[in-house]
Length: 264
Image (cartoon, rainbow, N blue to C red; front, side, top):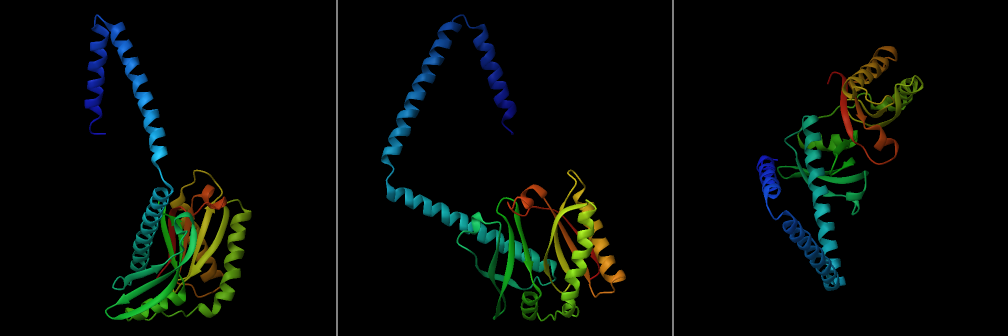
């Protein structure tokens, strides 16, 4: 974009010179002949290159592209996982090796086996991965995984409400189905639970709605329903509002906003 004024000036100057030239017809003919020659050369080079491509070379470049895409996914998932650890207050634990599916680049959700370390202590845990290289990755670590990672950091995660998960799930479904019946949301799912509380993925029904405001409102409403109305033990509710079109069609998760309610 920095060269755009220079290119515009050069194009204007060329146009002015052409308009004031006495042999405009000859110049136009030479220009068309040059275009024809370039097209012939391009077609010849294209056919020649195609003839020189050998199966071994094609397989080699396909393998290179596959490895590059795998490495890109691997590194982005590691970065997203480090960010998730930071949100849970355990930044001192390093993210180690990952075991992800060979087709991870083409998938929108899968489970990865992740390694974590601090000093000489190591642990592995399964994490849920959603998203893509283009839209970014969203990581969810369940309660057992957080407990393993927290032990490395010397932190004790107390899951005081986990015995009530069987009660929490139907209570959450009852509230979210009411929102769905009222036309506020199109679809939802309970993503996971951790020591804070439930994580939900929500697609809004209204196009063009304020995703951030809706995420915060849904999180507050659900947290109030669970803690005050139902008197259940929940520290925090996290609601992730996603792009409806991709989510409803099964094309992937693209998070537009994240709303939280409660204290942790």
